[in-house]
Structure formats: C-alpha cells, structure tokens
Length: 287
Ligand SMILES: Nc1ncnc2c1ncn2[C@@H]1O[C@H](COP(=O)(O)OP(=O)(O)OP(=O)(O)O)[C@@H](O)[C@H]1O
Image (tube, rainbow, N blue to C red; front, top):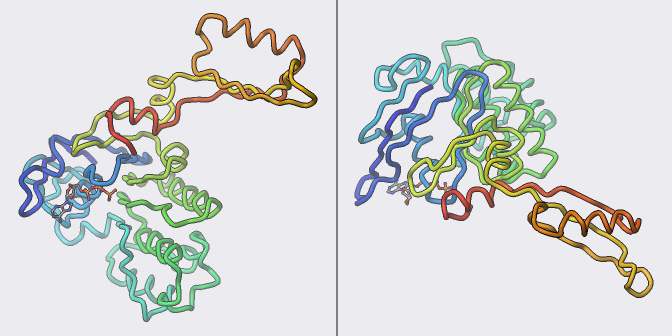
C-alpha cells in the first residue's frame, strides 16, 4: 500500500486534519501510527477504510488506486476500529458467520478465530453480555475473517490486560507473517515497541519521522544506566539509587568503576530512551 501527499479537510473545518502524509506498507509489515489524541491518525485510517475522501493525495492499495476499487475492496481489507460493529443480540460465533457470508473470498473458521482472540468459551454467548475488552477482541476476529491482505486496526490492544494485549500482538504478528500489510494506531508503548516493524510519528496532522522502534530509541535517545548500591558510608543497610543519564559525562566512568570495585552494587541496568521521550524530542509534542 502506498500513500502520497494525503490531505484531508473535515466538513466545516478551517484547517486540514492531515496534510502531506506519505508512507508505504509492504506485505508482511506492521506500520504503527503513533501520536497524541487529535494528531490525525484516525483520519488517515478513515481514508484507507474508504469512510472519507481525501482533498488531495493518492492512495494505492494492492496496486490499484483507492478510487478505482469497487465493493470487492473489503474482500481484501480487514478493518477493526475502536467502536465495535458487532450485532449485540447475536452470539459471537453468529456475528462471525454472518460477516463471513458477506465475502466472496474464502473465509477463516469462526471458532478458530475466536480461540485466537481468547473468546472460544464465549462463542455461543450474546455479544450484549461481553465486556468492552471482549468486544474489541471480537472486532479483531471479525476483521480477520476474510484473511485480509491489508489490515487496518485502531488501538488493537486498548482495554486489554497485559497478557491479552501480548496475545493480540501475537495474533497480529501472525497475520503479517501470513503476508498481510498491517496499519495500526496505538497509544500503547509496548505495542508500538514490540509489534511494529516501523513507526510513523504523527503530530499536528503531519508525519514528523518514520523509523524502526529501535532506530528511534538508539538514534535519538541517550542511553543511561541505573545503579542500585549499598551505601558504604550510610548507616546499616542504607541503599541508594543512582540514575546516570549520560555515561560519557566527565567522572561517570570512574564513579561507576569505584562502586563496582567496592563490591556494593546490587543491580545495574541500562536505560534506553523511551519512545515517548523520543517522540517529545522530535515533535515537541507529548504522547
Ligand atoms: N468528523 C470530523 N469532523 C470535523 N473534524 C474532525 C472529524 N474527525 C476528526 N476531526 C478533527 O481532525 C483532527 C484529527 O483527528 P483524528 O481523529 O484523526 O486524530 P487521532 O490522532 O486519531 O486522535 P485519537 O487518538 O484521539 O483518535 C482533530 O483536530 C479532530 O478534531
């Protein structure tokens, strides 16, 4: 998928919600759009899901310009946005079979999908009885029913406990490994860091930078160290924590060596810059 020079002006708005946005996503790749509320991430996703039309720019999906696709677009694209679209009176399984029937391409087994998103034991329960997190997981399963080649996900791990969030990251990674191109928005640093192959930092309707999570952290943040040690001059078992932001600063190497020689170091960890810190440094904006 290729997006070039995207500009969107919402009805009644004076200024564009997004301006000059360009990026590509290859099959097998997970691209994360990271940015604060109002940055324009959902607006980009809404264009890709054909919910709104851009004022300018081109979008090419699977080699065909977006405007030339017919209804079969959604045979190849899976969409899971933050407001779940499931029918509440139907069971989870029935929702998936109903959705599968809309497609003209081979579809996945609903029960297998429900198992993947940890809803196997709820397959025959009505969605009305589901928690918000469960509805979000059903939404992801629904988006995967047609084995999409492009997957658009809005905050796929929001509202999930850490174990489930990790599980959903595995499911999404497996989709990419199957060959899907994935575009997702997230506020979750773990998801940005562990799942995304590349991140686009979105701020004020523009892409400020694109890089791998590791590239961002190593290229823009200063690694530091955190040392926990027993204070030899303190009373009894006095423990101290020393946070060193810049290990190359004058005297730091000697200080660390002194603590190590004295045998008082209990823990010693490197501390990489967080993506949120790198985001703030590059955009002047807060996540
Ligand atoms: N339907 C709409 N009509 C008018 N303005 C809109 C509409 N949808 C979004 N906007 C505006 O467009 C800008 C970008 O919003 P968007 O929802 O794309 O941001 P976002 O980065 O996805 O935020 P969030 O993380 O809160 O979802 C904001 O200024 C928002 O107020």
